[in-house]
Length: 67
Image (tube, rainbow, N blue to C red):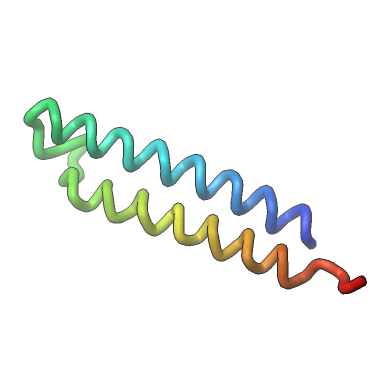
């Protein structure tokens, strides 16, 4: 279960970071839409994905056996 949470955290964090970078670069280039989505929506989805990644890491830490 810990490994699953760690991989979920890694994937969600990387996906979120990629979405945020795409949103920022798109907005910096002057565009307001990406594939039919507003840049602000894409940015919020990226932030939410990074938050889910952080929660998965926190859950993995909480699940570790105590010594």
